[in-house]
Image 1: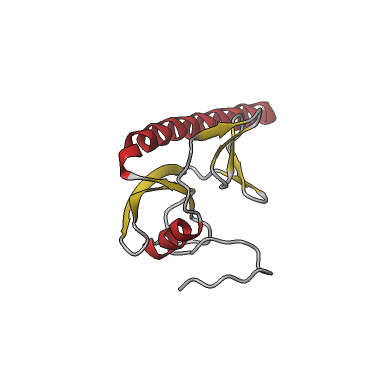
Image 2: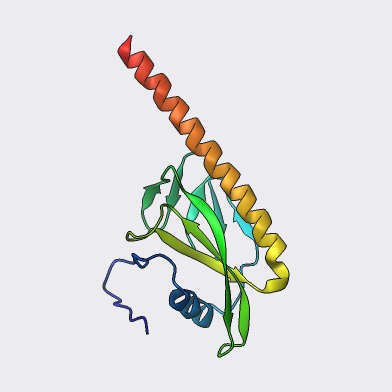
Length: 147
C-alpha cells in the first residue's frame, strides 16, 4: 500500500509509474480524463501538470524544464477489484529510475483508447517542436556570444 505524508513535498515514485500507483490513482480519482484543456499559456489533462505552449516547461507546483527524451505514453490496466480497466496516460520526462521521472496524468476506459492515442501524438509532436525551437534559440545565442 502506498502511504502519503501530508507534510512532504509531492513526488512520484523513482521506479516510474507502477501498476500499484496507477491502481491507487484510479481508486482515488475514479473519473476518467475528460479531454485536453487549454488556457492562454498551458495545456492540461485533469488535475495533473500544465504543459507550456511556447516554452519547453511543465508546471506541477513548480516549473520544470522538459528533458530531451520527454514523451507522453499510455499503459494498460485491469483492476477487477475496482471494476475498472482502461488506459493510464503518463508523462515521462526521462526514463526510470529517478524521482519524478513519470507522472500519471489520468486514465480513460478502453473504448476511449483512440482519444488517448490522439492526445499522445499531439503532445509528443508539440514537445519535440518546443525542444527543437529551444535548441535553435540556444544555438543562435551561442553564435552571437562567440562573435
